[in-house]
Amino acid sequence: MSYYAQDPKKDTMKTKQRLEAQAAAIHAKLDKLATARRIRRNRKLIGRCYKYRNIYGPGSDGWWLYIRITGGGYWMTSVSFQHTAEDIYEVKHDHFTTILDGFTEITRTELDAEWREFLSKLKSLHGLKEGEK
Image (cartoon, rainbow, N blue to C red; front, side, top):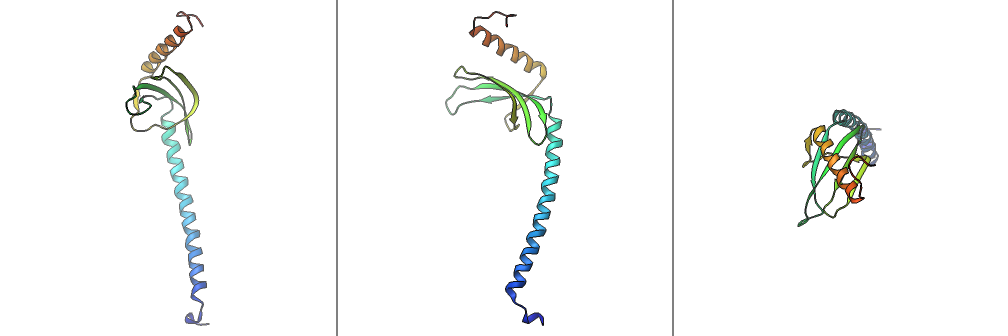
């Protein structure tokens, strides 16, 4: 059968299927590279501490959210705490985290000082004095 006698629809479908298979293989390789790069980047952040100025929305008084990165695989995990403008005390452990624009890196010493202040305020709500559990 000559080239001109072939069904152009069949040829187009075969070409499309071949190109889709190649594209899928390329995307899989790119995804594998991106995943490896993300894991390497996240592991470098383990132990780092950050603060973020949090708000409920426009016109809301802000407060600081404090965070320490505790795990760094594909997803980062963290320990975080905050005392919101509505007087809510919140602590999260093994929380999935993303470090975005607006997060400011702080020292572990600063984080620890803020944690002690946070606990002191929380204890005072329950009538506990320093040193009591």
